[in-house]
Length: 231
Image (cartoon, rainbow, N blue to C red; front, side, top):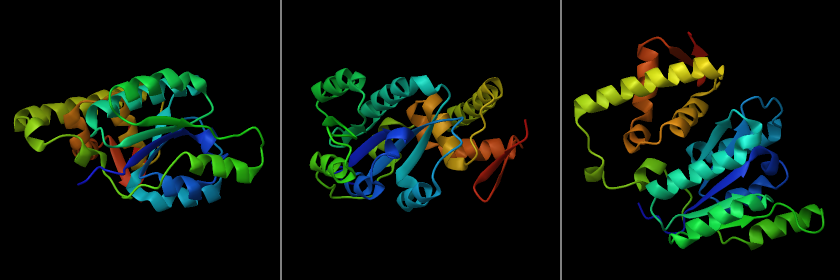
């Protein structure tokens, strides 16, 4: 799959609430939303619009609301190692603390920018214009992260090792969830949670098998994409 024209956008939920999602959808091939695990108020209209992006949108749960910037930095650094450098990165934020990271990623040869959510005026149309003025629409609208990572020959591992990896990752996830008290409510959220804490390439490629392992061991049940935990 060609990576030219793809753009991955990273944004906190609070910032997402201040912009027009239609504009974001036009300029992003993939969107990662960082949200506090204790968040209880997400507008229904926003959720309905987000669903149109399907698998191209991922929720990244953050256990400490004050550490979203660190989570963004971690995920960007992780993806910068995994993805083709032709894929562009963009952080939508007014937080200037992201700028050193953005400069560093640009220095590695990848296009990475920060887009402010607000201009000097709080007029909504000016906010929209500012957001779209910093981007050109991507030429492709779908991308799955694992397809962009690396040639399969470079990530082949022994089948027995793969089984151990899946089992250990599943076991560690259960321990981590029990320790933190966190319970991602949907399959996509649980996948994001696992990938956030396990950034090995084989984990990315076998995330569905890890979920299946949790189901087989009766650690979780899945009903209509919602997760029931048995621990």
